Length: 482
Ligand code: FAD
Ligand code: 2HG
Ligand code: ZN
Image (cartoon, rainbow, N blue to C red; front, side, top):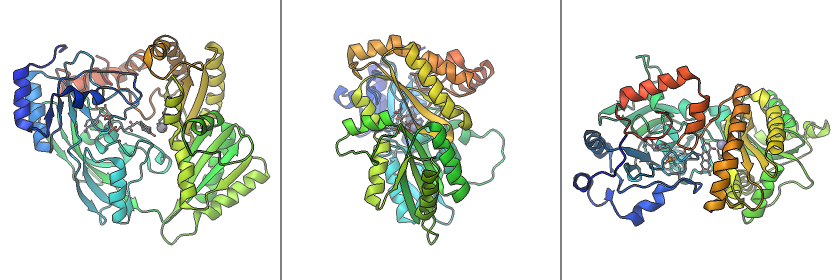
């Protein structure tokens, strides 16, 4: 394993190849990119490389491979598992896609966008809209998360219910493999049966098998009309029953169904200026629902209103409101999308991104919460998110007063937080679930992944890694336990 920073003569070769816009060794430029989004994992790097295009990326990967220098691919650095944070020993260089921001093409005829890795998700949304299309994946970090990062983490978000995660939207990939060779797999064929699928292998590889430089992505027609509702409920079981009822009544119209417990809403109202509760009265659980319809189809608010009305009449739902304007719809979404920020502002938490079979999730949430809070007095569970995918963020907040960063918070995380995570992960595995539903393994989940993964799965992943990256230079210390 490489453990010392690359030598200055080699850095000079990289600087010459990339020019002043693509190379910096100034700590003031590099430092903000050496810490993860949550501010918990600090790494170190002596240079940040920003190739302008695939040819430059291929050259520097080849140069680093020949010199045995590790690289950490980085997009928007919004990873929830410190996946883009370099190791602390300064041995690796950061390869940022910040300059690879071209939208190469958008074809309405094929429903395909070809975009470079550094394109920010919100920019792709805007570009597709100009063509009457949309890229049907969204998440709260859309203003920073890049296509390369989303592909490499096989990101989920709030429309997986209808469109699946990134994996189902990636039609082609262009990448630089660990030896510097270029894989040109951008042709967005709907059918291609030539054996092992590199596109799928690179999707979700967390930068351990090479640099994704561009992707062909599936676009769908723009929404004609949307209806956004907020419902107050007394249990996650009632929430799942409501989702099934909505699906039965509206077919595929429901594309988002997000579970929000009252304490998550309270956090948002406390920490995010301008937030207010959408419903009067106290509800232990809430659901944010979005239903959509194509151009010219009936207003989805009608069907949504009908089902919510019936559910309120028979007690399945306590109260509900449907946004009367785009501004109201956006305000409801802001409440949901602000939970991570509000939780971070409030204090330390042991974060978990778990999935179990969808039908088992409501009981799991309630029983695991009771068990964890009893085992670790003073902790408070908030379990929120993508209920319809069987995926919630089962975050366990430290006792009040323990800050989100700093020595006290980190000490809690390293001791109590680690024990909390072992318990949550054991409960998840016992329920037939996954300890990473959408955020990946990165470095913060690596030890737990190594502890709990099926040995055959682990051995196959290690064999693939060793075959494509025999010196383990691509994103060292992430995803695959060595
Ligand atoms: P980075 O954080 O820079 O990198 C992520 C990983 O991908 C790292 O392992 C990195 O090495 C690798 N990588 C980045 N670019 C490349 C590339 N070009 N080639 C190869 N490897 C690369 N995730 C969800 O799935 N669903 C959510 O709902 C969700 N919500 C979020 C909300 C917030 C507020 C935040 C902060 C994060 C959220 N995430 C969510 C986490 C999610 O993983 C990221 O938002 C996104 O996928 C990462 O994109 P990025 O460009 O920031 O990648
Ligand atoms: C979300 O669904 C993200 O909002 C972030 O995946 C989850 O902060 C979290 O734990
Ligand atoms: Zn999520």
